[in-house]
Amino acid sequence: MQLKGLFVAALVATLGAGAAHAAGNDGETQLSIWAGEQYLRVNHDVHFRDETHKHDQLMTGVSLAHRWPAGFYLEGGFETATHETDNGKDNDFTVDHYSAAIGWQFDSNRWSFTPKIGVTQSQLGNDARLLIDEDGDRVFHLSNTVGYVGLDAQVRVGRRMMLGASLRDTDEDWGHTRSAAFRMSFLW
Image 1 (cartoon, one colour):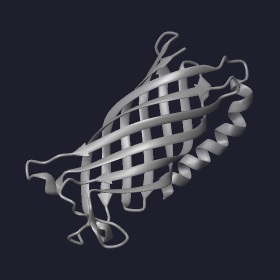
Image 2: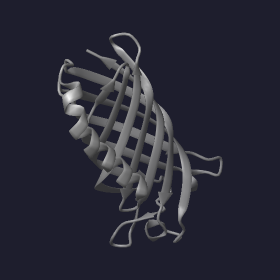
Image 3: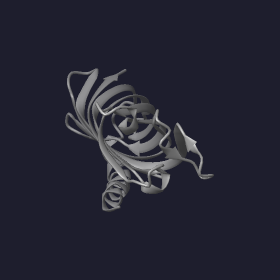
């Protein structure tokens, strides 16, 4: 929860301070891809064996965003994360996020910092049907729509590309995900 508070505070601060700074910049469209690691916690109350599971997952994603001249940022994206083990499908979990976010891109020299808040349709999956829905039935997937916070920090490489990192924190109804990734953005 403290991490979310810091992200929201950063967003509010840059909304106020960034508007005047970014007013002279041109707007741009950004296509971003990323890869990294996601920490997954599956709560015991949605697990068939009444166990809490914690896993590190490999994650990839893609998004399309537009940044307006003053710095306002609107993004839509998809990311998927997988944890697979040699123990079979009982311990294999997948997480898919379909998301939309707003934020503010604060530019300083070649660097861009983008705190954002959004909403994601989050799907947790397990091929062994170890998940339990609200009726107590075993299911392959659990899905819910929740809010999240994120922060991107990137440096411009030429006029049409940025490289950097992304952080994201999401509290799902079925657990929690936190991710860190290398991010590459193409601009036009």
